[in-house]
Length: 318
Ligand code: SF4
Image 1 (spheres, rainbow, N blue to C red):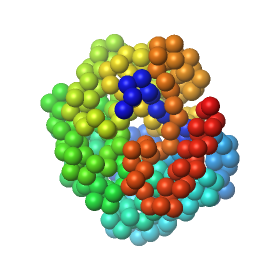
Image 2 (cartoon, protein in one colour; image 1 turned 60 degrees about the horizontal axis):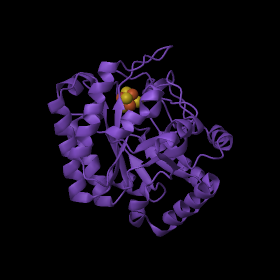
Image 3 (cartoon, rainbow, N blue to C red; image 1 turned 90 degrees about the vertical axis):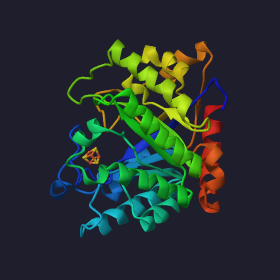
Image 4 (cartoon, helix red, strand yellow; image 1 turned 135 degrees about the horizontal axis):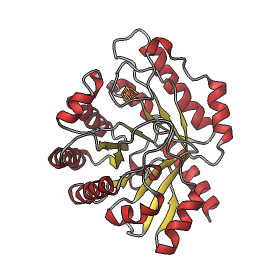
């Protein structure tokens, strides 16, 4: 991994449904399932057309319980939107909660990579997730194992700053490192600062920044070297990003015009990032949703889609 290289993924986010059967304490994305309308294909297509440079289509959905009568139609929508993305020459990356083995295998034929946050380990998370049945540690770790068995390039991560201790963080990172040593499919670990929602952004204080920099350094130490460390650049004060990269972050994740999870925190433009980072010697490079190291895991047809889009990204960046 070149030390001066920082990658990011030009992306567009589609939300198949905001409806979710969980009720995590910190969530402002969710609406109750019976009030949720699924994303229609014409609307999805319009979003794709509005972002022609977006190679990645992040399908970020609220979750439907495994035994719900609406699970089948919800899952069919994920497949439909994945096919739509590929038909437009884009690469879907689904993050829609725990999936059965059959569901994950079906999506993996259309998605070059998929994701699910581990979020964290310890009492702080247990309290936040007491009304979120799919957020048990066993369930989330089981999903990472299942993705490993299926050979799906995978993104996971931790939600930080919700009251967890350094020991909790170390334990979570050690669990991820163990999964990676067993299966080798974890391409990225997102280190995501929790930020309150609201009308206005509340920037990270210097104390919070120092604390997060310690976690980044610990993650770099505990995780195998091939795993990219990612953080969303809009959740940090822009001027601090060089320090964040020095601490060990080497990927800025998918960047769309807005962050659907934290809409009060505006995304920096790639140009603003380049202007900040290039004079300091960092090379900012667009990538597809699946890092090159994991391309050998892809089915041949999907790999062709990825190679095609990667060539386009490289020619646009040249
Ligand atoms: S699972 Fe995701 S969408 Fe559902 S309540 Fe929790 S954070 Fe919100």
